[in-house]
Length: 211
Image 1 (cartoon, one colour):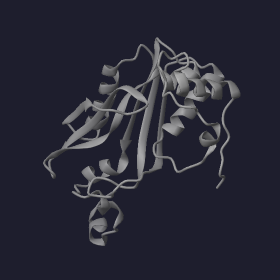
Image 2 (image 1 turned 30 degrees about the vertical axis):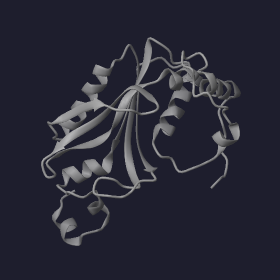
Image 3 (image 1 turned 90 degrees about the vertical axis):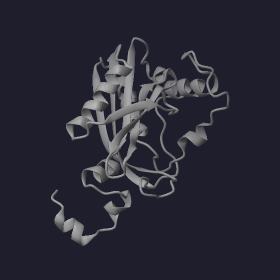
């Protein structure tokens, strides 16, 4: 378990540093603080799979690839969350990105809606949300009859220029991104009202379920 990690090429590190401090060439004002390389090198349990996605953007830059490009991952993430009927401190995230020319928010809504409809959820909505890496951003929710409520399933949006510009991805090329919770999906598919049921090993229920 290393205490520090390796950073990418120096020119990319400098581009990220400038983006944080003053926006770089993204058109943003940045965050306005002094970016610290020592902090960037610190290791921690990932809170989202965007860490994997950014590595893929780096490969896109290094290899001078031509879009469209689609990337998908299923990985474990860790959060400082209060555990309740719909939240876990450790869970599995499904993430996808599409790098393409002139891709739009409508394209993203179509992908997400079709994903859930393919696995049996007809009532799917997207609503405005906030996520630091995307703008515009959307929350994804499906209607769960057992709880008689809309249940948030994940987040999505178009990567901000501050995320893509350091890797040479600029208009008209954009990056659609979404992250979905696998355990919430499993909870709905197995008809459970509490996400914690997936980890308590109820023998009777496990024997009845067909995987």
